[in-house]
Image (cartoon, rainbow, N blue to C red; front, side):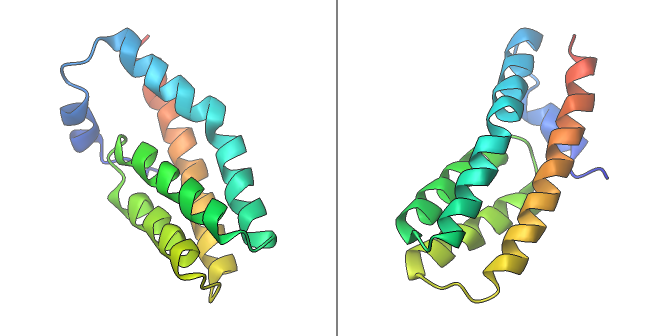
Length: 115
């Protein structure tokens, strides 16, 4: 499923060298599994500080890729950590995880256009 706003993505990266865009994409893809695992672990162990920190970090990274809905989901997870509120957290995380994977899929496709 397409999640990236292609027009906004191209606008964001229009002045970057292609190699830099590929590098930014590669870093996200390579770190994705670890970041998702850290968020999940923080939820499971009720480590609110880690949830807040990791979700905040993911929010910033996602912002680079023109996916405001996913950024808002990361913000919701960050707020849950800050407020120590686990209401609907499993559903929030499941949605975030699914759509994050869609982002990885989109980035993998976009990456090939920059090679």
